[in-house]
Length: 460
Image (tube, rainbow, N blue to C red; front, side, top):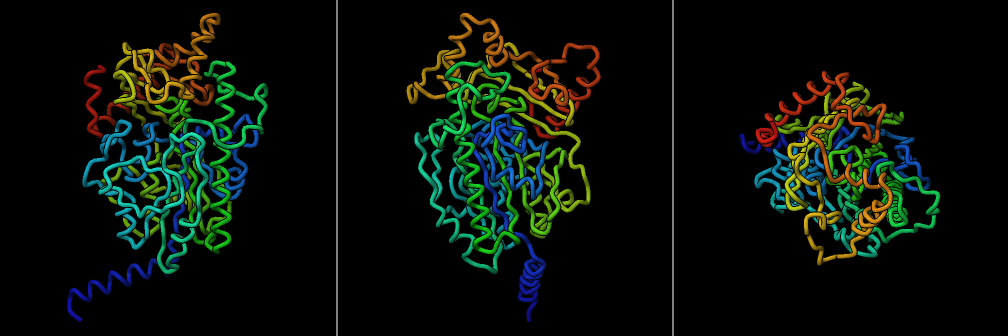
């Protein structure tokens, strides 16, 4: 045997040895615009939203401090798939491309012998960075009205194609992205709904929030179907089932912001070989998922990734992970120039807004505040919701205050998440919390320097 053949044989035997050791398959179900507060096991005040996810949490691992770095669809997915924060993968605005030459979960796991596929919503580019095997069956257009049902046949074919090769499949749901017009809203009575405290209570708010919950339930149904399929195929004992809700709800104060309703994510995992349930408050970010998959697949986690494996936490070797989680928002094409960075240590959260003099606006919500005309969808659901807030504010000063909370942000916003989980009481001006503000501000500056993020120079 010549030297090249010997090396090739050793590589094959190395991979085969890892397979024999029982490397898990990975099945990731990714929701769309679902804040964790709408999921039962995360304390949802409205019932019936997530029986399947709740059951999974009772049996597996539920993370209470899992965050996306940027609460917008494209940056969230780029972070998840590349293991890099937005400024280092290049996708730090919605619809922006990831840097060419970046390696994603596809190349990382294929190198370790996995088949890597995706079905449903993509919202990433370029294709060279994300060369998933595309599986037909799940709808990909999240903006459709009356969203079609999913066909699971392609998913089943993919995961059973070769029992000797491990797989990673990402099922990307379009629930509960707006427009909210799918599912069965009759489970909830309008007058009994519990609304998030920062939302203006109008008939339109209640109507669309109930429709949103109906789509959350549709995503939960997909989680249940995935579990049933794995069980039917005898793969439940060898497959890591990972359920994520993406970034927050596409309503004011959620998606497109650094508020917790936008960046805090649900994360529930059923891991092969771990039979003891766990509720973990360790700080984890989406960029940590890929390193965990690489680690579990038997690979070495590349040093250039921002994420780090939390497999030791899954195995019970540690109870902690990160000291801090970081966040970024850049308006880009979504509205007027607005830049914000934020950090949490798990207790306190600092939002540093570098353009406090500017209006905060998202074109699909309140674009008319700066003259944007939505010719594509003038009756967009979230727009109708927000317009009802403006109408109520004409006679209700409290409604006007909630609108201002959304439209105008001071330079610093400091919150005690333990006492104030909805971030309603800004402590930034309180001398009692000056040390926390300065320490977290310093952390943001250090992180931005490490990330090559230059916006701080205009915010000082």
